[in-house]
Every structure is written in C-alpha cells, then in structure tokens.
Length: 238
Image (cartoon, rainbow, N blue to C red):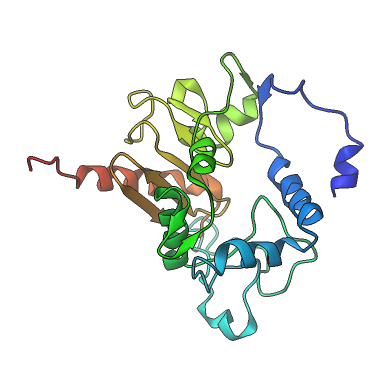
C-alpha cells in the first residue's frame, strides 16, 4: 500500500491544507521498518501489555469471539450494517484504525494520556511527548478541503469549531465556538463505527463511548453524552 501511495502525486503542497488522509497508516508501516517487527507485536510489547490492556488487539482470538459486540440494527433497513471481519488476523495492520478493545482497556489507555504518559507502574510516553501530541500543530491560515469540513462536523479541527489538530486527535483551542462543551486543552477523536473518547485535563475528566453505528449516525449519541457529562459536573463550591 505504501509503495502505491508513494507513486501518487500530492493532493496539496505540504503544510498548506489539512485533510484526513492515510498518513497514520503510513506511520504504522514506518514503525514496522524502524522497529524491525510487525505493528501488532510492537503495539502489544510497547503499549497494551505494559498498560494491562489484555483485551485489545487487531483481531479477536477465537476464545473471545463470543464477547464481540454486534452493530446496532439500522431502523431504516432492519439489518445490521456490515463491519470488517475482526475474527480473522488481518493481512496487514493499519496504523490508522481497525483495532478492537473493551471500555476498561480503553480507559487504561486514556488514563495514561491524562497522566502524561504513565499509568500505575507503566511508563509508555515521556510527559513532553504527550504535551506535543496534545498541542495544536496546525499553522495559522491553513486551508481545509470541503470534505474535511463536512465529514466529521463537530469534531472537525477548524478554528470555526474552536479546534485544531495535534498528533493523532483533535485539540480544543477555544470553548465558545463549538456546540459541544469542553475546556481548552481537551483532546479527543472518534472512530469510524461510533467509538469516541475525550480527555479534559483541566477537569481531570475522561469520557468514553463504545457503540457500533456508522459514522454518520454517531453525532446524536456523541453530543448527548458530552452534554449530560458536563451538566452533571459541580464546581468546587458545589
């Protein structure tokens, strides 16, 4: 895949336009080349195993297939939307998506990010690295494609939404521009099949939603959870 991508012309001059792309998938291959091992083994050795995320990987082992959640039935068709088959080991491991996990494992990963790269006895990242990851990396005046403006609505990393983009997820840069509540420095992202998380360092808050619906069906659930969570918070005097 990377060989094919390398033969394509660039869609934009580097640094001039933000567009959601295959960049993180390419990064997954770079990790394999630099580390000398497959991405699934690298993630297990460096991330999931140290953090105790025993139910996270690129596919579901046969013994755990019965635990696999099914997608929500589409009321317009009465059928479940098709999902990638995660019961089989994939031919290649995507750096940009395709992993399966549980809410408990996902929480451990988010706790690591909230606590600047370490959680319990594990140290996965250095604090300055997490600081870089969660800072807005987009330069002033950068352009956005029409697809980027519409495909992810309230999570779009645009100044009009009070958001930018760090190294892997959106970063909140202003509180009042976005329909969703959240403090500046909050960072988050959403999966293609409804999963979403956010970390609000100022509130010491983590939110995780594990649902399986098409990306276009997720916003109402995502917004309801965000509203209800922040409405439930009390200030220190309360």
